[in-house]
Length: 346
Image: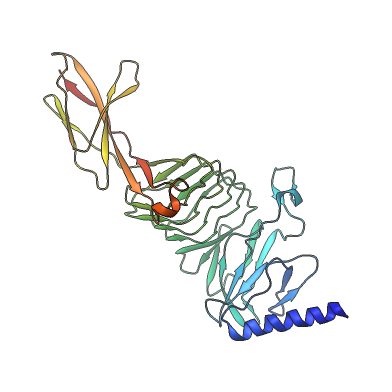
């Protein structure tokens, strides 16, 4: 009897919250399953499709969530080395509507290998087993158990959404198109095998938001489109080294007598000048904030090889010295591309 009273009281609280606030959602961590024929949300004791639904952005629309990855120990690894979860469907069903309200968005990646989305859905489309907004500008949801190790995001994608590729354990490399200008909150959080991210050149600006690559412990290198990038101070996990940040920005030096000159590169903080040694290695000679370097100790009649690399020191976005000092980085250093060799006669 007490259990019944408790359940009634809980239901009353939920109904009261729904009646007086914008969010209307199922309790997180409970198990639910979609009945596609009836278009409504139904409780199920054994398996579920979605862990949370809400219409908090608009009372007339539904947003689906499935961000709760089960503990690793409950997963099973098949012969191909792919982890899956018996209580989670391999195919994630995306309903057109729930209780007569259209499903307009998925927020975050999903514990599944593929999606089942109506090709005629008005708000979303599935491209290569990834959910995008209908206009293709926002990547909403990646299937965490997809076996591919490299993924090239299609051109036209402008935003990689909140948690959109999170916990995708099989991904090792992601290639991001010129059109993308924003990596949203925690977009790649928990991608354990991700080691390289490549932004294709051409984009004039980029914003990498909070916790974008948090807990992606094996991330070694990110190729950025330019020095014109904004990186939140918490974009990378504080417990590991910030990955090598490089870009395509490259000076083109010219030799005049015993001096090399190059054009200023936007947002470069300084330049490193190197000499190429006889063994093929490059030795750092000096750094300069200018756009030229004069050599005064060259032997007459000898030829010397030099190269120039631009460096940008970018302030970390949203850094608060009082709150963040010693915890988050104050700046990020981005290395440009070394110039082609330039010969100078002594």
